[in-house]
Amino acid sequence: TSELSPVPSTRLFATPSSLLLYPAAVFCLIYVLLKAIQLYHKRQQLLKAFESFPGPPSHWLYGHSSQVGKDIFVFMVCQLLTLYLSSLLNFTDPKGLTIYKFLIPWIGKGLLILHGPKWFQHRRLLTPGFHYDVLKPYVSLMAESTKVMLDKWERLITVDKSVELFEHVSLMTLDSIMKCAFSCHSNCQTDRDSDYYIKAVYDLTYLVFHRFRFFPFHNDFIYRISSQGRRFQEACRLAHQHTDKVIKERKTSLQDQQELEKIQKKKFLDFLDILLCAKDENGAGLSDEDLRAEVDTFMFEGHDTTASGVSWLLYCMALHPEHQQRCREEIKEILGDRETIQWDDLGKMTYSTMCIKESLRLYPPVPGVSRLLSKPITFHDGRTVPEGLFSLFLLKGPILPSAAYMPLPLKSHFGPECSSCQ
Image (cartoon, rainbow, N blue to C red; front, side, top):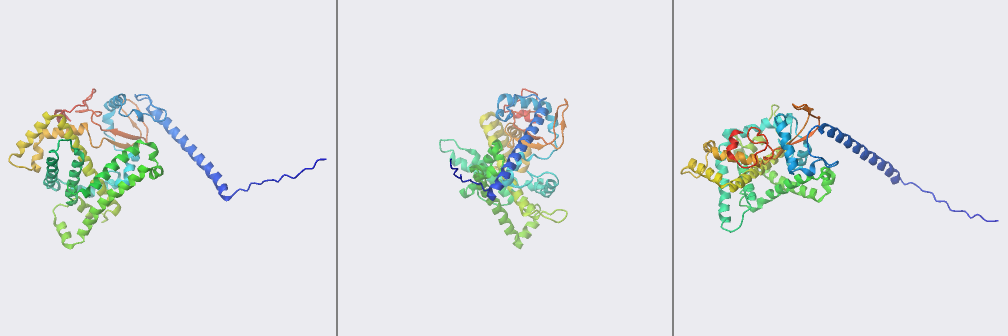
């Protein structure tokens, strides 16, 4: 006979954490699966909607993103713009936040981001700050800032090497917007301690663009824990530090009764005065959050895009010395014995204005705008795009037709004489 020895039995005891882990894992798996099905269904709808439009072959996952900038892609965009430009320019749909939402942590929900009733409310409150009579005195302030920049260039060109102009132009436009819109003489062009704001803007502009191009960074959590996300937060902190300082100094000055009376006696208030004193029909002013959003928006948009436009204009003038010479002769004739431009001179600079417009056509500081279609749109040839589509309209000069929607081939060389036809 054989003896049977008892085999010890092992029992698995489930811990409370493991009991929660399994349902959570199943939930996450189902959620990811549903999202994948939803994205696939949406993609199939878009593919069906766009199959009637001409275009180069697309990747099954990335679409046409890898072809942006290539000749065939640009050519197809040109053809589509030529066919549908008149319809696109009539869009009144809200802004698509696919791009703009990445700017919100930086500039808040100001006029650039807002749409609808709140946009109209802010626009109505701020419109007095852009009256012609308000803008006229700014010409001398801008001329003063420009002279500081030119004096710096006079010292730099004695050295036999190239000079990077964009940083100097950015400081000049920042100096101008600080003086004109915020009545703040910051001396940022000569005070190197003010450079931190310009450098923060450089970083923020690059980081926002890179985030838009890199799809995983569209997720807030992934971006926040990434090195670029941390760099973005630090740059935001520096930019907000600058605008908070400007607002705090003005609020402090308004607490002084004499300063307050002086501001109230002004025939026209500057931009920051209007922000601080603005009241709607119910007597409510802007909240602290709205106030900083508008200051951040105009501080950035008021200097960075202008600096980009001025820099590209100087680039075009350097490439085409014959147009540069004609502008110089025109301005010298207008000035005569004077050294400073005045408001009434601006309307006489016809050829210089043409050159500025042509430079903006070729190198627009804001190269695109986005809209979210609130309803389906049908073009003249019967082709339709669906509701809820995010649309990015590129305004890059060589892509956009020149004078009077010039038919292909598009004009992509510098020619100021054509700007008078636009």
